[in-house]
Length: 449
Ligand SMILES: [Zn+2]
Image (tube, rainbow, N blue to C red):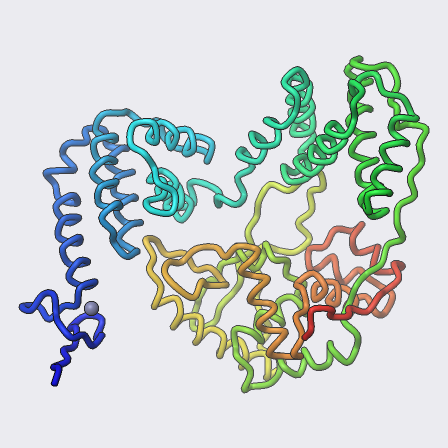
């Protein structure tokens, strides 16, 4: 008969323990060995090799990061490499992700970075700097997108495109909008065999016919048209061309429609929110979107402030695009009435606190929405969407996109044909106005199976 032993750390039952003294299974004994080696690297003797204080600081951030995860031999090797690298190179303070990627390339030239096996040490440091609030989230850094899209333009056009980007940036257009416009322009450039500076109206019209024949929607065509028109307009302004070839073409915008939940669905969602037996995180999430009109971004970056067992939500403030509006105050305090809502707040807070305590964190970061594992950080748009799907599945057995819920919020607040209440939620006046006249369409779930 075989004797079974239990690992003292992971409690797994194994036939043979690797470390008999400490009662460890193979994996745990490997971890133990790696931890010991890492401890040596964390010690003062190795840190003393790095002279520059800022480099020491970066090395410590790196150590904090890797200590959160399962250690592997390649990571240890990378730690040793990084130590030498930081001892030999003076690094200017990181102020952007672009600088992180630059350092990352230099490091990669000396010591190979194996994606998936070790990852890049500077990206890890960047993530820690993001937690500290020094760098924006990696997902909001657009420098890489610009580099990638510019590479695909013919080289002789690059200077012009770069100037166009600069012009748009100076007009405070959002990066993601500029990139979207560039994509339309690139698609056109790839189609056109004619030099884009010697185009005429017929060429442009042919392009729209091509788009239509290839199954692009009317919405796509109208977006292409405004992007092209805007670019050629700027070209005439800069005297690169004389006449904007788009100017005499009129493209009809597709009729606007607001996709919202029908009344029965809204009622079901509301009773889920009010139900004391609902999952507090799911119910609160739905309430924030359906009643307070939170966007994915608000959900990702809002933080909570706790005072006397009550909490407030602090919304993130960041540079907005062309429109500057802060109709909603930055701090959102919740009412104690009605009773069901007060009890939901308390249930949510209890669950939040338990989750927060269980996560690893280098600095106090009270994000409203917390990851389920590992460390405290802002959730991505994709994770937020997955959470919303889980919540709507639990409430109405349907996957309802966050966008539809938010529009349903607008619909609820404006049903008295007065959308001014929406501006209290921080919606722009133009967007609010839309709720007074744009026809509604009910959301039908096609993925429900
Ligand atoms: Zn074990």
